Length: 137
Image 1 (cartoon, helix red, strand yellow):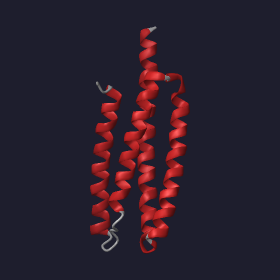
Image 2: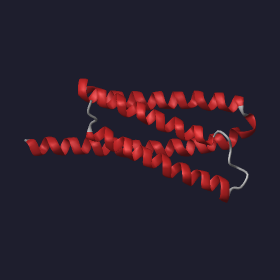
Image 3: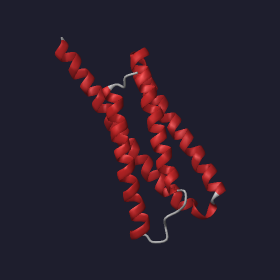
């Protein structure tokens, strides 16, 4: 089973982003804001990494089987991610009340970082695909 170049690039980049953002965030919470590091911090990174893996797998399957539905899938994935995130935030905040505010702020910051990255990645993918079509004509 071969892996597409797009999927490989996404996996490499999201792994790198998760490692860099994870270490930077932990450093900020531990050294710049002492006492604010919380136990649920690693779960935020795991959540976004796993959702990224799911997302690229869905896009890869869609690209192979129904490429005309890519935009619909992109929007559906963003809505699904938002709904799942809200559910996760509510559950975590009810379960761990003392860390709720810091967890929410950290989660929202990572949500924005990953949203910007994913939007950039898929935008450049689509632009590259259109340029490739123009060259073929």
